[in-house]
Length: 621
Image 1 (cartoon, rainbow, N blue to C red):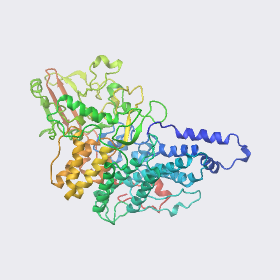
Image 2: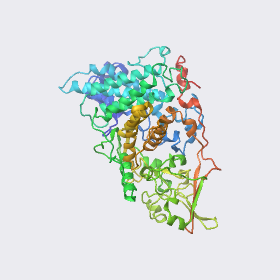
Image 3: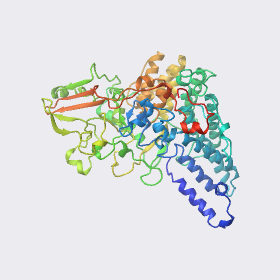
Image 4: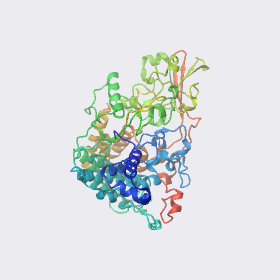
């Protein structure tokens, strides 16, 4: 999504131009006239479709995924330090009366009252676009293409409803004033899935092979949405894992094998180039062993730069996303929102220790903390074995994703430059040898004198999605949110193949290894399905960290009760003699977390149930 304009303003100006010469006494009712005016000209119809694009991720906040409060903080990936109580999924407090971020603009992309109005918009567009007068030879093709885009937008919004709330209120025509809303009902999971797939098929047909403006729907974006949807529909949660006889949240007909086959084939079609030439960025031959420090940095930079693309052409891995503008249109401030407080940033969405430990060593072996939650090493021990430091020797994606104690980042702002000439993230404290604190604290801690209220609470900051060239306190980011990328497609394919087992198992392992090799990690080898499943879930967690996929994954795999645990902080002590210690403080809880099974599905808000009491609420509420 590049070159995005403010469509709301654009269409208002177009309508003004269309009405300003009219006799005000002869004007029709505003609603009626506006609709007629919009579809009296292909340019105005296109501007109306632009509003549907702007609201595809919900009305409010940034479109798609680059937001101040990340969905990652509603999982075991991260912690929102400013509004933790609003993350009701992990707090065990989600109810129809207490929706938290699910009921506010911060998570508008999953909000019932935001998605349905945009579906109404697309229905209005599809019901009227064929009335647009043909004025140039190019208009028929443009109208056909726009219809395909509208079907994609509607499919995207309905897919969000299915994957978040379950069976949807399906409607292919705009609701009318005076219509009896007490007659509407929710459709089951199967019917909702079929409706979305039909929209996707229609979109692919109408879009054809026409070259599209950046940011608009393409056949590949449609195919990636289909792959994502079918991967969700082939998961334990909706195949008997939870309320198996309730068709609003589970498939009650058909077989899991059939759904896995559909998911496999949808991903394979993209991999085969049916919708264009997409591939992983970088090499995916098995990496050299051992990796040199230069190798690790090269792999880390390659991965990091997928999300640091700037204005211009997309790389070959990106199927669909947004390139943000520094001013006007869609903008975002990831450096400000998530950067360390020692840079006058807000320090939000901080990675959690259990996830940090998931990152492997550079040679592909598991990272092992040890039998207790404290590590210590003298200066001599660190000099003899740098791996005594838990942040040394890790896989490349770790260095592209996590800002840890001692990580290199930007030079400090001018007012802090003298305190930290190397520009490193400091999350520790300096101690005397006897353990007495000296008055030297890490600049990025909550004990620092610089904006401590924005300091991370658990010892880490998120590097992924930030831009090293932007001073967050002063400027908007101009880097990228990638909504669909080829790596996710490979992992969707790998998962379906591994779950199908048999002859498909090795195909799944091969796809998994492409993702690993691109990340600088060696091949996995196994013929055991359970082992392959564990590896797939581990790889998906790290490759797609922070990309809004984890919340769906821990639900559809039904592992939320296991991975949602209380948040602890990492205490780092640095001594004058060069020795260090790292301790996960098990005596203090930074955020009390609990998962309740009802939260596998977002409830319909109380206000909406009051408006349409005939709707069936999700189980557990």
